[in-house]
Length: 241
Image (cartoon, rainbow, N blue to C red):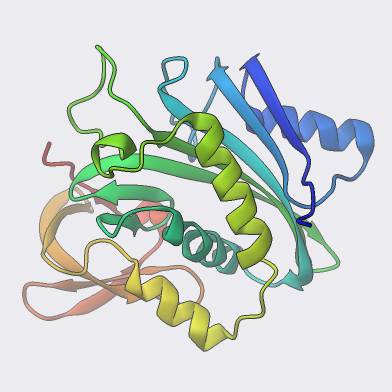
């Protein structure tokens, strides 16, 4: 008999990440893979100050709390583990754009917001926010992709949330060597097949993704064959849509 994992369905909330934070503050600790699914968020956000826009029922709006079996040393390792765990949920056309976007071609399918909780020099737990476009709406952005247009297996927010929770509970507790993780992440990394436009120091350049360093810097190969690495605040992908 499979373990029953904590799962909460919320009608309207400011954000599932903020609600998870309130639950942690009130309860002190949560069971691993505690999952919050919202029908609508009034203050959902991505990395930094970017906001997540949704129409009720058209998107997956989810947060999952993970207690790591062994403390992790690097934030980027959490990112890698989450991406690799998520990949089997999606069709082959979905790839992961460093550091936190899910892409179908040059269109954005969704994004992640990972907040790590440190203790004793390591990451003991993480709150993982995930937003996925499921169905187009009248005001849908032309640069957005939608999961139910990419697969014949039509998902609802509830069905997808349950699948992700189950997948996380299995994949994130399985042993994995560093080399296995790096290889698996590299295989699902977006931008390796053809040059993409990037803005670096105010100048637009074309480059392909070479990989990501162990400390989470993006390695790009430019048209002159030179490879250089960048932090997230040093580079911006130029959306052609």
